[in-house]
Image (cartoon, rainbow, N blue to C red; front, side, top):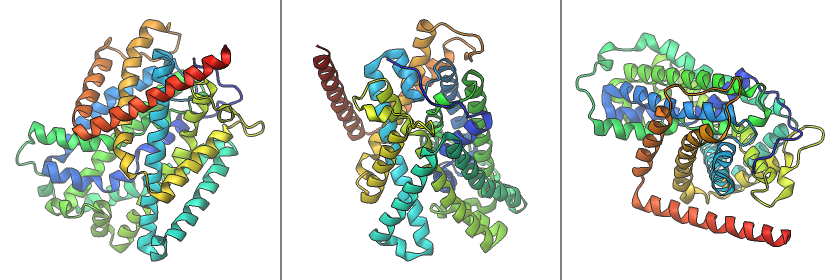
Length: 434
């Protein structure tokens, strides 16, 4: 059962929450994505962005309504647990926490790979481990000392990662060749589906940015406004980036799958542009890692707060800084461990499908919460009845259906293991009670 947050401070406003969501969403992917989408769609790439923007908007509306109704710390976990109970909440919490740990570890390694292009010493294991240790000790310290410090770092990171992209869009427009944007043939539904499936993952992150629900000021108003502001900004920025890179590089865009934006900047701004966008990619990755340390530990905290997992220390709030400091330290240590060993790679598929299952749970929770939780003044409600939640459920099932049989089996086995763990925990709890 969801319990009230005690000791946390509500200090995050619309701008802070919007920056938090954008910081997670704009990751390393957008710095390579334009070439991948162009390879599938050609000059009609823009259709993928528009289509995917509409799809993510439907799912985001579900997050806006659920977040308006349930605004405790925990994000999707709290929405699903409130709607469907402890078992669903346990699965959602583990999916959210586990997938974020793996994703953050992967991005941390990618960040070191970029640094290694400037200094080969960072290819050595000892340098990589020491660098990761310094980064995570620093980030853990900042986030333990207060939500204001953590969200302040996120705001800075968001600006630093967005500014190079805006510079690229503004200065790159003069080098656009209209002929490169001419659409000769419309894409097939197969091409649109394939490209959208890839592009969809560039929009992931809204669920992580909402985990800090218990520390948001006036959540009924702030959460919906922040979601619409951040998602709208990201969709527009992505469309402009694709237009510029396609317009500047044309058919050559697909030949630069590793660094399409840096190559676009090189033509528009010379060597300075190439370096700027390369550094921008590194800043973007660091921003995602720092954003993860701000948000994801709150899932561990929420699971312990609600006694879904029997680890009481994770629910402790720092008496001075009002942060879930044990959860932050534990999460930071686990990400450092996975990033240092690199043993997370085989679990990336499970992490990806876990996020889709989280989205499915949130869409279903909107339907359930409308029936079980009385609406209060100021809450956001999706217009059009159940149309949007049902469409969202259909979209998510479509994406899940594109997983291979091997991926589906791996996910099913993982859920089976978690189910066994949940009932063992429940059995132990009952024994103690008796």
